[in-house]
Length: 319
Image (tube, rainbow, N blue to C red; front, side, top):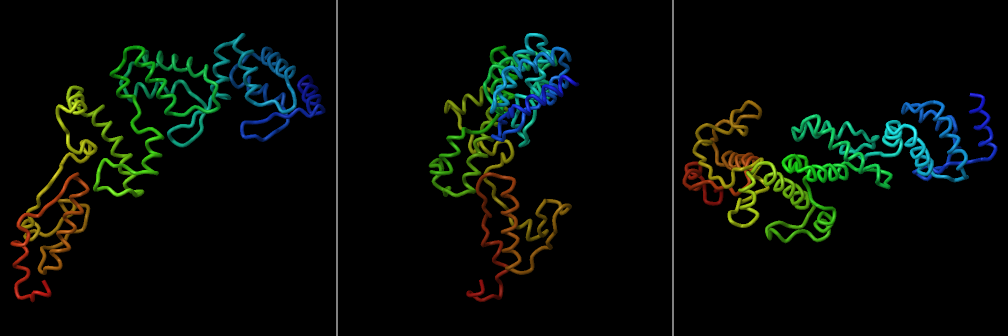
């Protein structure tokens, strides 16, 4: 520790500062660097030698990125496993899908492959190892979850595991397309106005279309739809709202009243209507409720015939 203290004091006197990734400068710490090596199980005496190598290359304003590069290269010569741990813990940071920044963990790639695709532990670990080799070559400060997933999918294709790739792929649309939607809207549907709600709808629709084609439909049917041999109407609703157009018979509601959830177990129940105004409210609630479960238009057959009895005794203006 005396040696550490002496070196630390010499560096302080030299006023050596390190520029962090966020632009903030702080004094170089010999002890802090040594501790980071011990934390990845690097041999202690080798750790001291590596830190000494870093000290020899120090200059005022050196970046943390440069320091980590020196440390990694030195560690790689003596203990590749410790070098990989150091790189993962201190250099490779991941902007995860949970909106957090986390240290890279190769085991997470393997576990997600097993969970999401049903890959064997052996295959998952082999793919994760290959991905790790590729990531080490990248000169980036932050990885993103989509970036890692793209590399995993590339490796799955290289290994001939197309079926696993289709299950592991990420759904969505490119940044450029979303920017275009926000700025210009879409001309795919003349009935849709350009507004924030329609932008959300287009983005969600595209992801759900891809989901139906990749995950729900057999490959030959997906290919037939995409080639124009068949057409699956409202493909974006195939997964969650396969019911398209619907015609209601309001006699059931006139006789039994309104149960929005179908049973009355989870929502309020309205008795059979006695007045026209009540029936009007019921018909609106019926359509709003059904709209949550279907994708197309709704109608009420011979509506005026069934509503007519409620108009008995009322003036034309009232009706």
